[in-house]
Every structure is written in C-alpha cells, then in structure tokens.
Image (cartoon, rainbow, N blue to C red; front, top):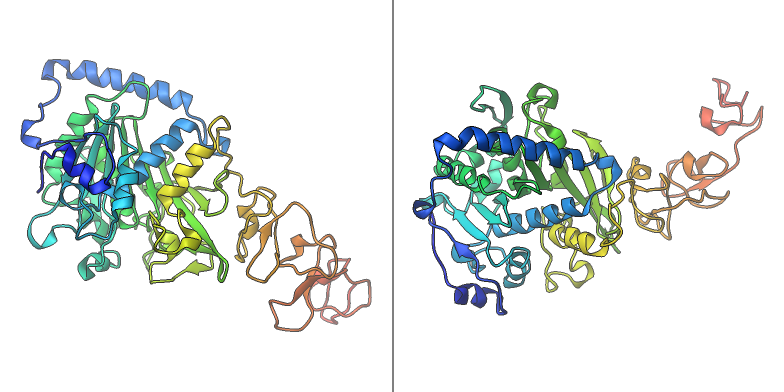
Length: 462
C-alpha cells in the first residue's frame, strides 16, 4: 500500500504550472474519529442533514442541478486520478501530464488525498483513491488497465453473493467483487468512515465513483459503503453491468435512485453517431445495469438524454475503434485525435457544468434540433423533439421537430408527414423515402402501406 507525504514541488513538476498544495495522508497519523459517547449525536445529525438535502433534490426528470453537476465533475476527475502512479505521477501509466493537471485543478488547496494499491504483482491493477475536499469524501475505483489479468476480470462469468453488515445481500459478477475485496479494503473503509465525520452539512457527504470497470466496482462497493452515511451518491461513467440478480431483488437496501450511470455517444464524420459499448457490456447469462441512466453527446453539452431508472436499453451502432472505442475515453488529449479533442467524459461534464451557469437545471429530455442522434431504431428517444430524421448522409440522422415531405430520405414511418417510410427498391435499407399511403385496391405488402391500415392476404389495400 502506498501512503506518501509529498511536497508542492513534486505536484508542480507533474503539472508544470502552479497547483495548490494537496496534502497526502498517512493512515497511521489520521485521528480515530468521534468519541464513542458522541456517536448517537453524530448519527442523528447525519440523518437530519440527509433529510434536508434530499428534500432539496428533485427527480432526475426535472433536470440536473448545478450542485449535482459540480459533484459529477469531481467524480469524473477522481475517477481519472485513481489510475495515477505513486505521488500522482503519470509516468508508467496510461495517463498524461495534461490530464492530471486538469483533473487535479478540480480540487481545492486543502484537499487530502490517499492512494491505495495492492502489494506485489497486483500493484496498479485494483487501485483506489480517496479525496477529502470541502467537507466531502470522494472514493474512486480504478478502471481497466491493459494488463491481461485486469481485462479478464471484466469477463469473469462467475457470480458472487455479497452481504452488508445487516445481512442484506445482492449478487454480482465475480470479477467486480474481486476488485472491491482487496487486501486494503478494511483499512479503506475505516478511512472513509473517518472522512464522513467531517462532512459539510450542506452537500452530499460521500460520492462513490469510477469509470468503466471502476464504475462496476463502485456499484459493488456501495452495498457496504452506503452504511457509512445516509447522505451518499454513486456516480459512474461507462460502467458495465455489475449485478447478476434482478435489481428488484437487491432493493431497497441498495437505493438505485441514488445511482447515476453516465453513457456517451461520439460523433465521427466518417462513422456517424457511435456509442460507448462498454456501458452495455453484460454477462451472457443475465446481468443488470442499475441507476438513473444518462446519455451524453459529444456535440450537445447543454442537454442530456435520460433513459430511466435501472433500464437495460442498449443503443448502437457502437464505437469499437481500438477495441474499447474512442467514445469510451475519460479524458481525450489533443495529440490523440484533434477531431474529438475534449470529448472525454470528464471534459464533457466539465463543459456542461461551465456552459450552463445561470441556465440550470440541465434539461434531460434529449438533444437539441440539428444534433446527431444515430441510426438506432430507438434514436427518436434521444431527441428533445422525439424525432430523429435522416441528415445529409445515411449515417448522419439529426434531431428535428419537422416531419419530412414525400421523396425525402427517412428512417421510419414517424419521420414522414404521410406516416409512411418505404423503400424505393426491395432490400435496400439505405434507400428509404417518405411516400403517400395507398388507397383501396392498390398493391401493398404491410398494413402500414395502406390508408385503411389493412393489407390482407390478397396484398391489396382494403
């Protein structure tokens, strides 16, 4: 395990600019928390605080508040830093100096940071970072590395039942349980518990987070960590499905309305609107995603597409470039690809927080007109107008509130004023256009071809 106290000069050498002096804490020097005789008073105060904050929070369908988006940005920043090397260095990791600088700047000069790692050969595979900042505790679990053992953790087909201290249980994919049940787990729990004793009374106390595999591990860990404070949130980015029991079997002791799962779609000029497929990565023999599912667009940072609680919906086409896909990235540097520089999860939610100042809450009804929405059969759901129509090319459908005239390219019947989207030639799915419905006696091949809505066995409209 790694606990170091490092000087400002070391942090500055990472970022090459002035960065506030973060404090790294050795667990042995942390105070033990509240005295036993004050425990009842502390618990009562936490519950009162939780009740007040929950009253202030609205349903997701009402939009995303400024306070919530600030927490989301910190969660994404911590998720990135969970992969950093000793003393938050980028050398020897898949992170960049630019990314560490950007994400560190989301935390104050008084932030206390604890890095955790398994010893020996497992070092750097299931790391965790705990950040205490501004009366808030953020624990982030590391995403998958390029180690073959770490990659295989995502594809472990075994299941593992896990229970909390109250014997309330849920069942998860074994690989993600292994990512939580580390050698340092007990010590980490004590450090988080101590952190929660100093929480600000006006904000969420504990944020449990992670990107990709780290998001799935965060979901698992929340079964036990939620007992440390009634005032917590689970915020994940591109998290694969972690549960192997139906979510209804794991609630109410797992409160999934406090889980927020972000997915993303990236628009590529040569490929269209492509989805982060890891968000939909599931066990072949039943596995479940949980939480309020929110889809980000690389183009529209003023809006989000909300897909519901514990939904198992999947969207395509999926971005598989470089195996994991460019849409999966948490932080995108300029040198990677200038076309989609700044489209990582962290950068998008930060831009959303900053661009919506004075305009909160962020609408969650879908993307604005003119934004790309993809070729999925459910693409209409992603638009605020609930209409995704063909754009300039077959891979470029866009959100619109105007239905199409006859002769214009379409994707489905709802795109057309006439209510009929049909192929000009049989079998050519890219050659569909709006056309008039057919009168009685005209040749048809399906009910929707006809004004009457009936195309019987004679293949003539009724």
